[in-house]
Length: 190
Image 1 (tube, one colour):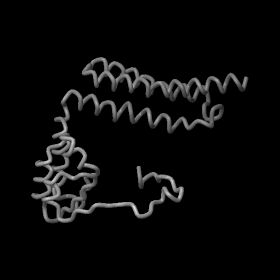
Image 2: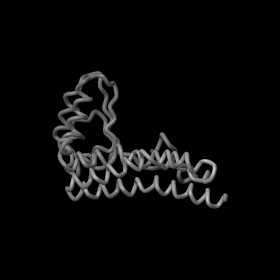
Image 3: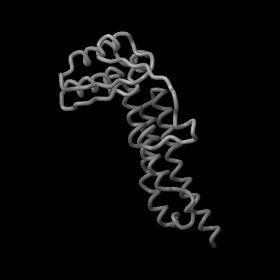
Image 4: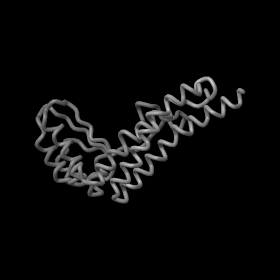
């Protein structure tokens, strides 16, 4: 009987994980500019998410498949289903204003003056690849309120950003925790 229960618990985990596959199919459809198909796959993923908790409780997965962190698995699938894939669909269909929409969000945060520090992490890549208009980012930096400090990270910063920056630093590794076998820490590296 214990093997049957363990098998049922594993099937429930597989059912939950199928939400990730459904989210991937939705993402693939979005990339192929098929928003209706993407929304169909996403709807099925939402159905799986709505029913997998009931199945998990019925199969008592915490007891019969405790070596799998079902809550973590569900969190990953939820992120894909409710955050990442919908944003990708909106992006692909142009509802987010393309990459310039991201620049507009950053510019609005800076111009608001409500934040003393705005970190535009890895934005240099977006500028270099042409995903965000470098001139718009440079204008936002140059026109920022005096109380707003901006930190921009990333390699190969465009000259326009370097020109409006107060300080530009190029880093090189002298010593790193990874070299001593210390793994990346949640909240620090990711």
